[in-house]
Image 1: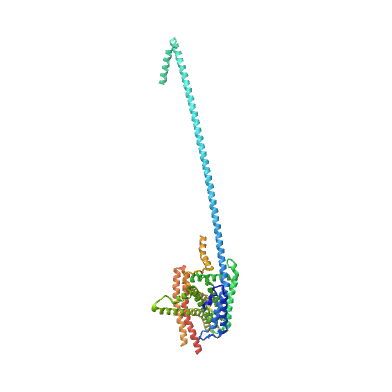
Image 2: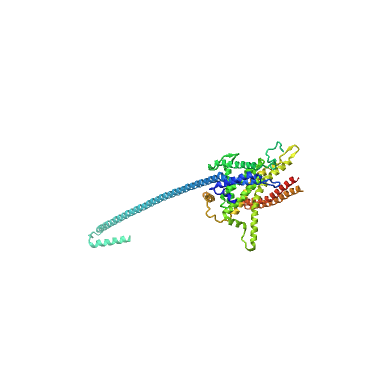
Length: 202
Length: 273
Length: 75
């Protein structure tokens, strides 16, 4: 009896369930009409029972065909569709994230490069300024030094001139005072010694 | 009792009086099955829609209802029978829909298949034999009967094993009786109670259908009895097929689907995070 | 006497089953309140327990029906 119930299981041989169910149904509906069980209060007719078993045997594959399989297929299709949509969205999001990181990286790179360039330009300019300033101070120092040297040379020359002039004047004055020629070598040396002393004293 | 207020014959309790013969009751069964299959077939129109927005009857989307029934039976099958329970959805859904439609039919028409003990017994016998068949298919004939015999005992205790075997056989028989009696008692008992209350409502020349006040609880009974029959069938199936550790080469496409479906929430969560 | 027996059978069975189902519902409600996440499984178990309890009542109800059949046929 139990072997008859493979109909809802094996989709390969539904006809067995149909045949057995039909036989049970016909038997229950024809011969079974006499199978009344006399239970007082509860009407019990085993023909109906047998027919019901047959009906259920026929019904299982039909419900499977009409209801379970198409619905399961539809639900599975919907699930795969949903999954596909989700994975698609996920892919899109990953792509977007990738693009954004790319863009950010490039932006950062550009910024860094610009900053570097600005820094290097500033450094160059500072170097240039430093150089220019040092050159300028150098040249100014040079000029000052040369001017001082010139001044010193002029002064020395002037002092020398002045000294000879003073010696000459002194000798002339002394000539006039003592009325004689004092342009001897010895006198001249005396006067120059004196002047040197005066210069030193000064 | 044939007063003007006789809207629903079952509410007025004519059910117990008339028990039709075998062909007539089978015609009623055929009508119930035709309604059920018609609803299923009508609901198929909506399956191509991504949200199953199918034909609407009385404000309810039939396809959505069919999907909900499927999901509920799937929940039963996966939760009670186990991860291999997906293939029992057909049987569970068949029983549920047939019993439910017949019960609702019984709210309006005086005779309904689920209020007929003979037909209920047929359903219960089919269910119990189906459970036995599944047990044999899963554990083998020897394993199935070993499951009957309880724990392994030796010596004089073999008698106890025999006793347990006997008791298990009786319990299997009782399963048929309990399944059918539960359904019969609830539906037929509901009719009886309505009939008796209506008898109380006969005051003078008036027919006051007091039994109509019971219609909410009868509606609840319709759903609950269909649910309980299916639930107990699922429990029996789960008890019988529970012992197998590994089906061993019985991985069908439906198992793959199950894994896919079970993995799906996590995937969705992962997407959401 | 048989009529009295029928009434008593159904009434007493209803009483006992009512008490038992109340206790079951009480326990299930407690469980659900304490662990709302397990309410699905608790509900399933509760329904099974209620079904078995109701079976006891239905057995007595069917007994009453049979007795009633005897009553009507006997009378």
